[in-house]
Length: 208
Image (cartoon, rainbow, N blue to C red; front, side):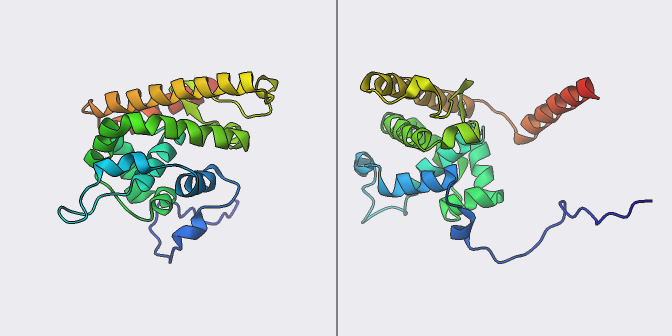
């Protein structure tokens, strides 16, 4: 009889974590953090944050943008799922700097700032696509899969670049609208997980 090492994936383990080391160069997460922190103009959010003398400290727009777009990249199109990931998933913890906003804060940010968010998401996606990061991660927006820049469709002319930008603008708008509609539902995470498992079971049954 074969003797295999035990599977300990269901056990908890306490280990020291350096969050910065979890964001590896060459990944979508690394590019996302760098672009948001160094290349985007976030001054459009300043008018909404006038709390330097009164009120509680707010969540940084850069952090909110990073966790929301990372959530979209992983198929999380609701504030509840993104908030849960920030509490339990090491990658989301690392991207957010271990900040764990409540799902109502995420939903409020998307609802109030959607006009500022859409063009920023488009910029991030265009840069990541140029670097070949979208295709490798199979980034899909609302059922619209975005291919990598190896396609001749995006060979680099201004007209092609304009069409690409327009496509990503539409995709950014759709995913934010879908996010807001999902936040309006009383969905439970356990229900979503069960549905996903049912789909996996059906697919496995067809193959076996």
